[in-house]
Image (tube, rainbow, N blue to C red):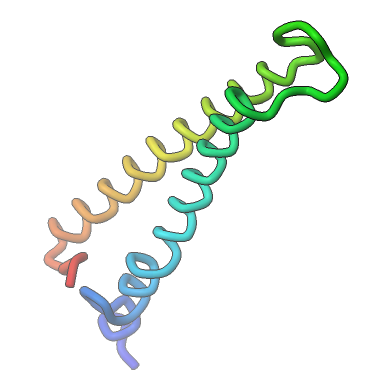
Length: 95
């Protein structure tokens, strides 16, 4: 197996595995963190507490939202940079 076969292109080799399996899973996890933060901020109330924002339930939801958005932005940026680099080198990143 040559290095070019190992790296592959499109939906084969290492590039194919990263583009079709790993990146979507990581993106789904970042999106799930974001959705959990939205649910925690708007719908999940701290139990036994009467007023808004006691014990940081809302602050924790905001943190999940923030880190979910940061994760998605970083993932999209790195994924785009890698695909740009692969296109520059003549390795087709898409199928």
